[in-house]
Amino acid sequence: MIRKGPLYFIAAVFILFIYIVNQSANQTELTTLLAAGGLLLFLLIYYMLSKNKLIIDDEGITQQLFFGKEKRLIWHDIKASNLSWHFHGHGGSLEWSVIPYSGKHISWQTSFYSRSQLQLIAEAIVTKCEMAVIDERIKNVAMGKFPWYIF
Image (cartoon, rainbow, N blue to C red; front, side, top):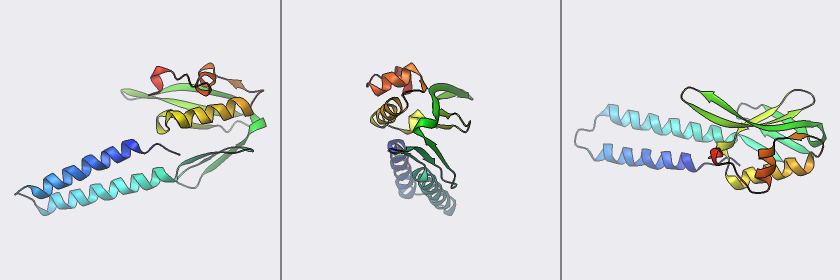
């Protein structure tokens, strides 16, 4: 369910870079080794991201991560859901959190998902968690009104 378009763009640029390096007259073993290492790194990152999943079903919401961690929340156990900014370095990211009564919350970055996927997640949370405190922006996303700063 993760948006992989940016990874495809990076792969296309990297393949173009490899093609240009291979066409140059001064190709060395080091450039070939760096290109192969970069391609392996890209494939590893792609594989890791493809294993991260957010599963929404009738019972609840489940987050599966690459390293085998799995967090599951039942719909009636959710007390709040909100969007918050987290700054790191010169940039930041919008993080969506689902907080249960037990304290172990699930959170993910909104930039990993497309607008249609975010709308489906918001619709599920709004309809299944009537008693939860839900951020007004999430209710707007469920209706298809996205804040400009998600993307």
